[in-house]
Length: 122
Image 1: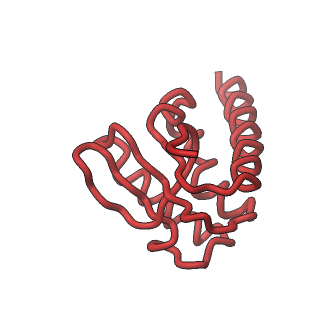
Image 2: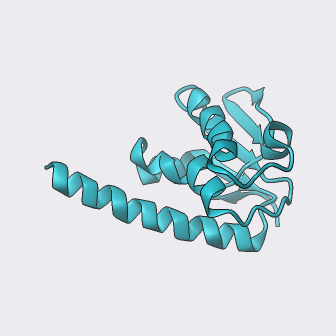
Image 3: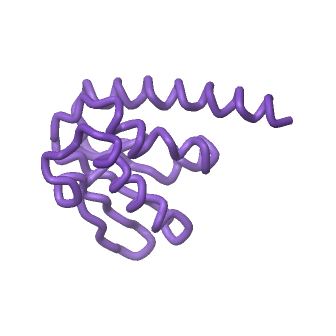
């Protein structure tokens, strides 16, 4: 399957030049259900966002299947960063097919929400 561009995770943060790896399993263990768990990943991503050219999120083939976790970890990035930048900067590794589909649904929903909020603010 190889490296896929999009919205993916690893478990612990490692630095490789301007590439950072976020290993979900190392940060959260098997606690990948709640918004609090997802916030740990979100914080790891945003802490390194400006310095990183690429942030690799390693899901370690964990079965997440939690809207709360994925929304908090990755979906909320849409409210801070442009979608094009998210797609270019994040790489999802070893993510299960179901979780990828769930994350895509979350991202589309958050993108719509962000656009509506921008219109209201204008």
